[in-house]
Length: 329
Ligand code: NDP
Ligand code: DGY
Image (tube, rainbow, N blue to C red):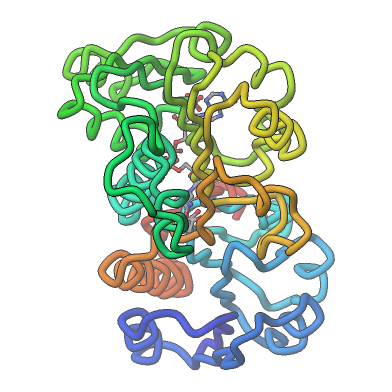
């Protein structure tokens, strides 16, 4: 039976599917395996089910001669050296689509919490600072209704975030590199306008970024971009921490140029306890929970199972990231 190593306990749905077809070994510890431990445990495995925090690089692949498929339990795969995998004939798959709506929901939770100072207000109540029944100037925030929403990267999640803005009667601006069916649909159905990045930064009240982390998008939003944003605007990141220069973000939040931020992702995860973001009131911080609903994580689990099982049968897996690897055979 083909042997597969799963680097963390994922929901039962996918484990059950894999156990029906494969010899499945699972890392059962709460703390993730190190690269060395992944290599040791994956020896002799033809499949590897990885998480976004696992460093799946060329060195690791070089130690695993039998490896045929890496099935990532995430849509983002910036932790995997896909080029090295392709060169070695290893198939890489991911979990697109099933987590789109759940991640868009969380993005909106952050938009609302950051705009209306929900985290700060909650801390205020719990601390016992609510001494006056109702304050005409107490904890004032920004309106969402009628505001301009700027989406950087109008892919699956970017579109789902834009769709949720309809009830708030927002003007929607977006950027992407290419026009496609999605951009046409969004322009028609949501009256969204494609603009260049600088225009989006200058005209949006709320900016939400949804690009994958690539060489091109690393540090995409930095000092120059924060300075271009409207004073008091809101910045949301549920993509990857490294698309933003976190130091520039902190400076902009501290100076009050940026009104507030809502962040699900960080340059270093878990966040270090000396990270200056932790000291700022005008930022809402959550621990990379964009796709964290019971139903979605279960669907991601069946998707990784389907991907790994199909690939090991010698068939084209439904969510292949490097299809060119099949042509090289
Ligand atoms: P998609 O591939 O559907 O969308 C990404 C979009 O970004 C595309 O429209 C792409 O369009 C655009 N894009 C890529 N590069 C650039 C660029 N340089 N400038 C402008 N636009 C660009 O991915 P998803 O929407 O499914 O996911 C997006 C990312 O969200 C994932 O890669 C992942 O990192 C993150 N994510 C985070 C989650 C969380 O838990 N916080 C959950 C799920 C996803 P084009 O190529 O035409 O420019
Ligand atoms: C992803 O899928 O890329 C997320 O970060 C976790 O679901």
